[in-house]
Length: 468
Image (cartoon, rainbow, N blue to C red; front, side, top):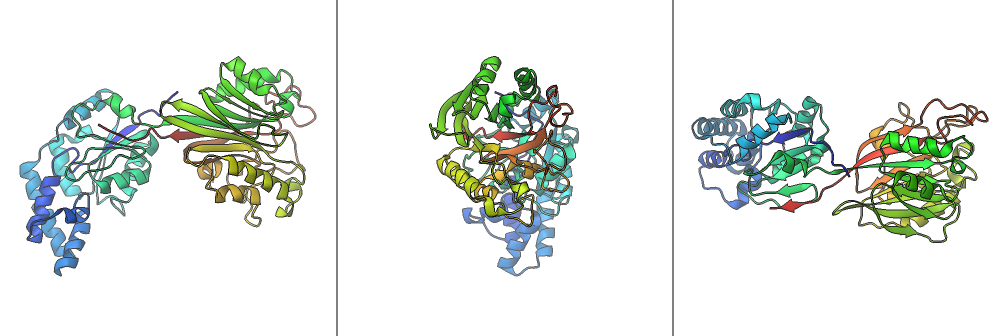
């Protein structure tokens, strides 16, 4: 198993690194001219100065600009005289620096206030700082965290954001970050991808790494008569699997024994379904699904345990080939495939993250603007997303053709092999063909032992919630 590498840690400022939430609360009370209550927290904690000023203006009739100036002044005065790092904050920043993990300051405070805090903490501790002045929208919108990730050149999914308010948590999660919440004034509930701790004391870099999701790389691959059209096909298949570092492969056209033979050679787990379908996995298979009497066409699924408490289902599908879509550019002949897809969809557990992969023998409605191909549309209506199109939204710039690397023009070229998913997050998706395959019939010595391109998608599988 492997978690995503920790690429960066993104820190909120007020109430997270320094005890300024109390100072901000006092500043708002001073400007409001009254004692604040718990009911006021959503309009005060984690909010930009302008947001709180607008809220006070609506209640008092005082111009929002005047209130914002007063809030800036009162808060800045308190920060200059009363800034205190939160326990454990400087130790954690020092540990991250020693291990070479980049850090960023991401705050809803204005630049003037942030620079005052940076000077107190040591601006050199942070590679990047993003303030309310630096993005069109601030928290709870994802913009500040996305801007920090862009500046650092990192993937939000491989970053831990450290926050102390619901507003900041919402911003970081909307950006796709894993969240460590250390509540200052108001409680925060744990949730998937969100861990809640009492504070930063004792938090180590390894602890932050342990919060990151697991990587799950899934391939769909039609083996083309088990690979038998190509010399040394089994060795070439094993080479592809090793080079692509996939974790689970949904197979079609296995010719009965391919899944077992590949798994045994790799030391992996496998599930054989009928004469045509199979799934192999480097992770343990804890359950199997589908029609035990599945024929040449149909679907089969497994549950894989990536780690303790982290499971996902993977289904492989092979749909009927007759009246193949690009040969007949109309959705009128899709009834058999649609029925097969609906049968598979009806068998899939809705409570578990799932990848639905396979050779659908039909194009996607996402690629043909004039035809609503019903098979992929049915999957979409069942809550499945197309991982390749999520990673490559433009079908003109990135057609992603999988049929066919060995069938040359005038054979229609199209995308008919898919990795769909529900409940997972796409990190990357690509088609894959090794070498430069020669066209049919001169294929015996090809490095690529199939007439389909494979599709490989890397997902993140959440590490769950925790509270200590």
